[in-house]
Structure formats: C-alpha cells, structure tokens
Length: 497
Image 1: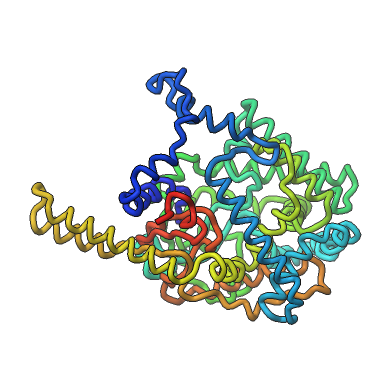
Image 2: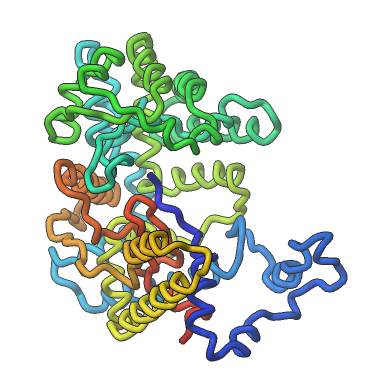
C-alpha cells in the first residue's frame, strides 16, 4: 500500500483554519486578489479565474514541468539543507561519523570531474560477469541480480498485510518494466509512441555509454522491449490496479512453487533476502507473475542477459559520468516536459537525502524546528480532537451507540508531527571516500535493502516515518490510520500561529 502524498493541501487547510481563526483577516489577506482574472467568469473557467495571475507572476522556467506554492516552499527547504551540509564540510568531520558520511555522499555527488574520469569503469566488472555467465549459471545470475541490483521480471518484499496491518506479509508484485505503465508499451497514440521511442533511444545510448558497440546496443534494446512489452500485456490497467481487493491474492508457498515453476523459490528467499521461505505470499497480479514465469522459462540466455544488462545499467546511470546523466535527461524531456537539467547541487542534495535522509533531518530540525514547535503543533492537534469530539456529542442525528463508535475512531487516529521520536541509526552504513560514488551509493542501497528485509517476522513499527522532516509535503497512511506532517510543511505560511 502506497502512502498518499499531496493530501496535505486539504489537510493543511483544516489546520490552517484552526490555528488562524484568531487572525482571520490576516489569513484571508494571504489570498492575493490581484492574481484573480476577473475578465473570466468563474462559473465558465474557474481554473483560469483563480490561477492566471499566479502563472503570469511566476512564469514556468525550463527546470520545471510544474510550479506552485509547494515548489516555492521546497526551494526554501533545499537551500536550508544545502547550507547545513556545506557547514558540515567546514567542520572536517571525523571519518566513520554520520556527519562524515553525509559530507562524503554530497561531495562525491558534486564531483563530476572524478566521475567523468572514471566513466563506466565502476560497473564494467559486473557487466562482464553478466556476459560471461554460462547457461548452468543463469539461475545464480538471476538471484544475484535480485539480491544486489534490480528486480528483473517481478518484485518481492515485505509490507504491512492489507488484512492485518499489525504484521508484515510477503508480496510478489509487478516489476521489471522500465516505463512502469502498460500504456506506454501497448498504445500507439502520439504521446505513448513518443515516450516509447524515447525509451528505446535511452537504452541504446546508455548501453553505448557503458562500452557496447552500436549494433550490440541495438540488439539489447530490441530484446528489452520484447520482454517488457510482453510483461505489459499481462499488467493490470491503471483503473484495475486501484481495485485493492483484486490485488490481494494470498497463496501458500506450495501453490507459488507449483504455479510459477521457473523460479527456484526456495533459493530466492534464502539468498536474496536472507530469510526462510514464507508460508504464505500475497500475489498482487497473478496473470502478470504467470507471464514473468513463462518468459523466464522460454527466453534464450542471450535475451535474458540483455535484459539484465539494461536493468543493471539503468540502476547505475545516475551515479556515473555526465554522459549517462545527459542521456537520462534527454529521456526526461519527453517523459515529463522538463527542458533544463536541475542544478548539480540540487541533484546532490537529492542523492544525499536519499542515502541519509533522517541524518540530514536531524540537522534540519535542530536549527529550524525546535521541540517547542513540535509541542505547539501537538497541542493544536489535540485541541482539534477535543473540538471534533464535542461536535460529535452535539449531533442530534447520531445515537449514543454511534457516537461512542465515532469517539473510538477519533481516538484511534494518529498524527505525527515534525520529526520521528527515534532517529535511524546509520552507524553500520559503509561509506568510504576512496571508493567511487557508484560503489558508495550501491553500499547505501544495500544498507536500506537490509533494513527493509530485517522487518520480516517482526511486528510493524508504528514509529517509523515514510518522509523526512525536511520534506515539503505530508501523507496519510491508511494501514496505520495516521497522518504525518514533516517539519518543513509546518513552516509554511498557512501554519504560522
């Protein structure tokens, strides 16, 4: 179950009303009437009526595919994080400390000169391993890919059980399609054809960046598209994938082994996750998994290797030289409409936060969101809960029994404010400035993967956060019945007490 971001817009309006009632005139003054286009009737074109002035005052730059108030807030948060990390560098942090790890990742992400000198060198040994694997080693190769680099053919991992959110279930899910959505592969309209062609160009270019001749890159592209298109043919549509009960298909381990025989499932869980085989698994898309299993049993070694080569290069590209970055950006132009690559420092911030997000968050809240701010917002939430409880008590259309149940629901609703009560411990994450940026980021990925797999067999940790404190957003987690407001969104103007 995915967290539901961007619901913050509606939720912040609720909190803004509560926190600003005593300053109603000031709050309403924040709605700039000069942005309203009064030449348009709101009943005829409400979007233009409300937004035209804003769009004219904030013209879209080439860096963005969209721009709004959240982007302005995000720019502010990014600049704060940049300053915090830059200050770390001036302190000459001790090797092995979290501060040193943060600084190393940021510095290496900024060091394009070193990455350009190295080119594809950091990945050549692994590409050679894929190429030289004999037929009898193809099962080992599949497990190696899943355990270390990508999820070819399907995805697997623990997540809260949709039928019992107190425990983790093991899910076998859709995966292995670089474009994600089936329509990009199967529909021939102008938009989907353009994306598909751009993707083919991306594969061919990146494989040549990795050292392959044009003819070999073309063959790899054809084989990747053959496999991913076949997977797309059995993937649920966007509408079908919103049907949660349809995505919940429990199967015994014996059933999975019988129906999908081309995967060595006994080895899969032991060697890729380090766990014993689960008794029960949730198959989100049975027809998709059947197609993946069929392909694994019918494709040639050459076709499968080409698919693995692309999966490997795809996950590595953002940590390599500028020619890899530029090829990815050319694809993004078609996919998202963005016409200018984000500044290097912003991309370096993204990488650092992806690697050590809560470590950066701890620095952020120490400077920008003290305990007093968290306490204030927690008090506000409880005042809102009390007010809603009184509202329930005064409803004349509710029976006493129904009111009691409504109070139970209100009490069960959890709100997390600002930052976690317990920070992640990154002490076991191995980051070494002598290693390449790619190697360090691979170690980071393996650390996070191990963290996820370690959840298996344990109760669901309700203290865990799905966003960092410096994220300008919020989310609702339906499985935990919780809403999370990171510190950065609480510093937005509509939260000013």
